[in-house]
Length: 73
Image: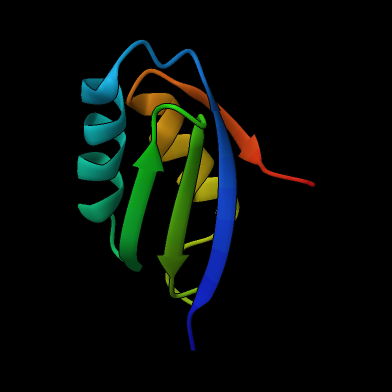
């Protein structure tokens, strides 16, 4: 089973920042897909919740140099 979550990303400065986030997330066990949009400051992540949690994803993004949170409409 996979879970899909949208994260708000703060402190991105360019499209390279978005690519850096995707690279780090896709290298994380349990993450199936990551798509970060610089213009919208959002990151869509599809992941296996039995292997990785939203908190771990936020931590990976933080370790890459950015602040994030689960996006709420």
